[in-house]
Image 1 (cartoon, one colour):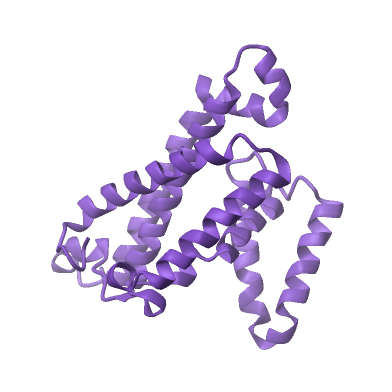
Image 2: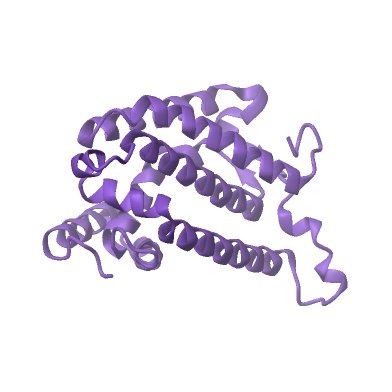
Length: 234
């Protein structure tokens, strides 16, 4: 929308997040009736399908070459006129921090709400939650939709910072990275995935000198965490 329709960047952000949440809602309706490994397989299939569409729909997504020259959110804020220290990179960083703080606050309010308590009940014991009157299917679909919305916001900030969008951004290995952040940091916590991201984002940087052993060390770390710290650091 920004590149081809010259849409306002902030409007494009809102539309993209809502559109992605709508897709997440539809996928949630289809996949949330499954459990355990079946749920993982179903969602992985949708991920692969979306990646294939992105790689082959050249007219819209740019295909394997992706889209370049995307105008980021930081370019709409004339902070450079106020202070020369506000470069586009700095502005992008501060915007990310601002969005991150706002999302954490919203998620905290959701967790403390009745909806959040229902989500926790479904996570801990779905059968018991259903027995006490919670519509577990609706709760899971809402949870899936909310997660998709905030994932879209994160993706928009990512693309806004880089100014580039390629098919690898939608690849399933990204999902495995996010899952790893949660496992290492701590499931069911607010700060755990953040700590996991700091730890695991530092590991690839450290392993750049040992690229042939990267996956071996990375996988061994995850196995160690699952066996000896199954609930994560937090």
